[in-house]
Length: 341
Image 1 (cartoon, helix red, strand yellow):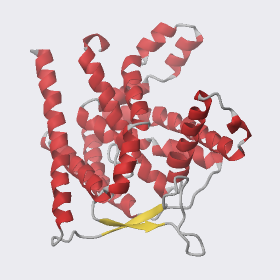
Image 2 (cartoon, one colour):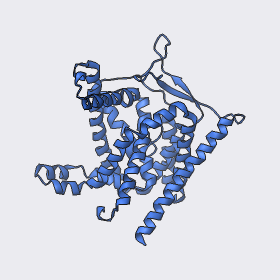
Image 3 (spheres, one colour):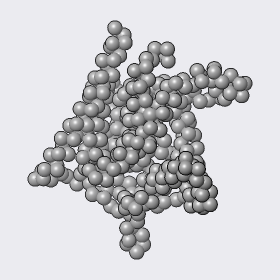
Image 4 (cartoon, helix red, strand yellow):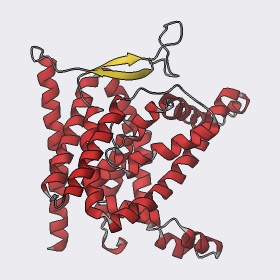
C-alpha cells in the first residue's frame, strides 16, 4: 500500500490530518466525517486494528521494523503529524474565527456536512428496510445528542479516562462529535482548553529553560489530567476501531447507513442560527475559562431572520462549505484517475 503512495499523496495525507484535527476540535463536527469523505476511513480503521497482540509480540521479540510495517506506520504517522500541526495552528485560528465570526463559521461547517451527506448518499443505494431503519436510528440519535443538557465539570481521573475513551469516537464514528460529547460530559473546557493551555505554557517554559512549573500545583494537576485523558483516548481509539473493523467487514451496508444517519443528525449541533446559553454558578454569575472566555453551557436554536443581511451571508457561507467538500471529492477522484491511467 505504501509503495504506491507518492510524495504528493503523502503531503495530501498530512493536509487531511490537519483537516481531521481541526474538525475534532470544533464541537458538533466529527473528524471521522473528514476521513469518510476523503476516502481513507476504512484504511484508518484497519490500520488502528493492527495495534493488537501480534503487534505487541513483534515489539517484545525486538522485531521493530516488522512492527512498523505491520501497523502501516507511514499512514498513521502522516495523519498524526497533520493533527499535531492542526492542534497548534489551525485549531487556534478556528478558536479566533468562532469568537469573531461565529455564525459564518457554523454556516461553513453546516454546508460542509450537507456536502458530505450529498456525496455519501448519491453513491449509496438503499437496498433493504434494515438499512433505512439504521439510517433513521442514526439520524435520531444524532439529533437527540444535540439537545441534551451538559453535566457539570468533573476532574476525577477515572472519569477523565472515560472522557478520553468516549471523546475519541469523533475520530472513528463519522457524525459523532467528540468535542460535543465532552461538552455533554461537562469536561470540554477542562480537557480541551485548560489542560491544553497548561501543556502549551509548559512547553514554552521548557524551551526557555524555565522549570518553575514544577512548583505550580495547579499546572501539574492539569498536566496529569491531560495525560490520563490522552491514555483514555488511545485506549478508546484502538478498542473502538476493532469493533468498527468487525462490523464493517460483516455488516458494511448497515454500518454505512448508520454513519450517514449520524452525519445527518449532527446538522442539529452545527445549526448556524443559535444563541449561547452561558454557564453560571449558584449565584447566577457567568463562569469563565482560563482564557477569560465565558463558558458555553448549551445553545438555543432558532429560525433565521430573512430581513437581515447576516442571514444571506450565512447562506453564502453554507454554499461555500458545500463547494469545499465537492471540490475535495472532485480533486481526489481526479488524482485517482491519473494514477490508474
